[in-house]
Image (cartoon, rainbow, N blue to C red; front, side, top):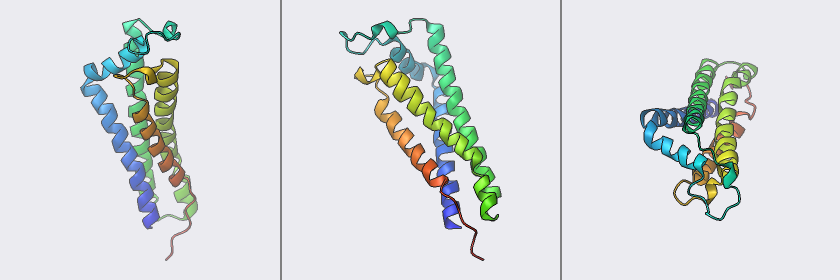
Length: 165
C-alpha cells in the first residue's frame, strides 16, 4: 500500500509543479513572455552564429508560441491531477485495476516530458540556439524538469502487485 501511496504522491507532485508553472506563466505573462520572445528572436545568442536565419520576428507568433506552451503545461497538470485522482479511486483495488488506472497519469507525465524535452531542450535549446544565451538559457532548468518527470514516469509504470490482506 505504501508504494501505491508513493506513486500517487509522485504524480500529484508533478501535477502541482506543472500547475504552478502554468499559473505563473498566466499571472506573470509579461515577464515570462520576454523569455519566449528573446529565444525566438535569437537576439542574445552568439553574434557570429550562422543559425540566426531561424529567428522568428513576428510578435504574433511569439504570443502564439507562448500560449501553446502555457496550454501544454496546463494540460500536463490537468492530466496528472486526473491521473492521481484515478489512482486514489483504485487505491485498494486489485493489481490489474490499479495498473490500468495509471493511463491518465502516464499521459500527463509523457506530455510533460515532451513539453520540456521537445519544446525547451530540442526546439528552444537546439533549433533556436537558446544554449548560447547567457541571459535566456532555459536548457538546464528544462533538463531538471524532464529528468524528474521521466523518473516519476519510470517509477509509476512499474507494475504493482495485489495488496496483502
